[in-house]
Length: 514
Ligand code: HEM
Image 1: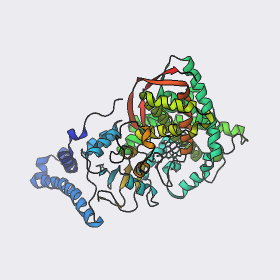
Image 2 (image 1 turned 45 degrees about the vertical axis):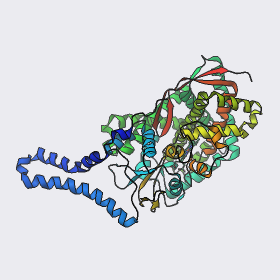
Image 3 (image 1 turned 90 degrees about the horizontal axis):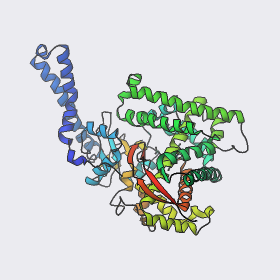
Image 4 (image 1 turned 90 degrees about the vertical axis):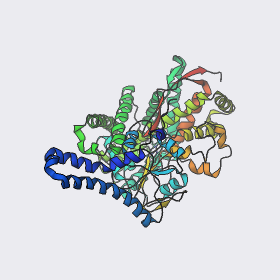
């Protein structure tokens, strides 16, 4: 599978690049002044004065580092190589996680700062002790500047659980927790199994090849919509929803969080206009979901489902806009992550026939209702989630106190920390052969391995849907593998925005006797 191949360190523009960028405000002023008055009219001293502004700006940056050291009694984490422009370019391309992983593996610290044109320190965190400390600290907060962008995805710009801090977040979370009780997850999972059976029927009658990401997206979207919202999505709606989510996440979750000016320019930018149109389409689908629920009302069958809990709670969700925003969020957060996790698991098994055969043998010795207890299935799923954690970077926090890294650096209070699960789960000092798919490594895991594995994040803001995701992952993968032998027809390519996606990967299936 093609991943990032060009080495960042071969293209190290760090020293010269950051100097030029930090000098840039002075140069820009000079150009403006030249255009307005003409440099000759400004005179020699005027030109020097403007250049000095740039220099002061540059030295202030250096001074800031020195000052921080004085205040925090520690050295700030090192800057990642690469200029600010390079980082912004990489952060908006699909190869960003691999690029950061390469930086982490080649540098002496898995915590490093990156240059962004916004206030405060920005740190990439790839050290599990620091990640755990940040995620479990009640003083850590989600930065509104980043999470607020996600609000546009629902078409109204209204707040939802994922984007809020404080009391309003807590009320929404508490209202939705019962939808993920073990009995509800069992019911939801039995619907996912029905959708899997329908998919297997298509495989039996198909040409023996399937596009793993798009088929798993369709399967999981249908299953979550039916089981959590009591709504059966048409194939057309599924397609429209997936495509709209893709386009709106590219704009709001990726481009606008890096280029903050995009929010100010709004309708002037084609990407922003397009994202706004597709966000309305997402909202329209949810309006139909809510309308259908209201027509049928609360029934024995839908009691305790997400739609019933959200629609009937006027305190946690104060109006229809908030209800719709929350419904969108669940479908977006749930289907993308779960379907790509299933896809990665199937791809890993397809690439490793001996592991696949061992798994199939183990499943064949068990009754299907006991598959979830299969130790080998659990190890295979854990390993594919470690190797390709779909939510590689969804956790961003502003820290409420100074935090010291293993190497003795200090991340100062108020820094924005991007927690990269890919960097944790491929740390060579924790995992032997970190880039290899080896389920057996989980037979006797070390404490460090267990502590580095946090695909659903940690603390109060961990994933509310993790039990459902885990159940779907085990059920769908086990059911497909029990009947079909998988091989890779086309590896496709890896893409990243919000989640890590195996795009265009096609698997070949051959039916095995059961
Ligand atoms: C393999 C599948 C999944 C993965 C890897 C995953 C991962 C995550 C992660 C890492 C977070 C925390 C983000 C943060 O720290 O800011 C999160 C939050 C969340 N997830 Fe998931 N998730 C998955 C499936 C689901 C499902 C199935 C649902 C619901 C149907 C869901 C709903 C949510 C929601 C609503 C939040 C926000 C929780 C809050 O802020 O209190 N996720 N997820």
